[in-house]
Image (cartoon, rainbow, N blue to C red):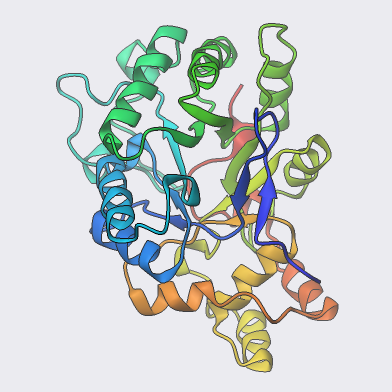
Length: 321
């Protein structure tokens, strides 16, 4: 099936397209160099976040790339970032993502959460100041953030609402062009939209999505609402690429397993943001057009779904009230 290279986002004052292939810098060993390489290779969608501790590196890469390519402008590059549940600029905060104690699904604990600190960045005023820190971290050359997300639902319904109202102020000020969420369930989104003060719709829900964790009901809900689904960890962080079915399909098309999985995601109508610090893989991950998976091969890969238990990350959207 044909795949578009972009999707239109809801709720924007002017038509805004999100490229269906992006580049993530989560846990990048050198986000500046990787983002700059990705842009040089042709990626035009970068995904960062406060909790990744590399908004600044990402912004510098964009500014340097545009300076070296005067035929391009800021509007040619789509940047997404996200507000974390606590203010990471507070004294005593862990200095890196690794020192956060990020847990796998089967154990471990975050060292800093809203509950542990007794305070959250998910208030109207703190969301405004948090967004401002994100934008300032990226540098003057960035100017605005195309898409800004509330990164997780954990602080609860009232906090989520208050933070959204703060981000609406940034939207109305023209500092971001669209708003969205990450790791939110349909219930969380419905609760938010039910409040009459919410004027800017949810444009995106960024969730873990790959053949082994498809979150089908949530994806269908978003599709019905016109909310674009962005898949993080679309390659299951490389842990499942030796799956027999994926390998067999890859051999059939003379493609890599990663290309097959990413193409499957695109044909499911989902935006993908694979990450890698390896330029060879960056190039391979871009080679997703000019060929397509046949229906029977799509079905074989779709049948690999293990539900939420197949996730490689922590977040189960339905686990949070």
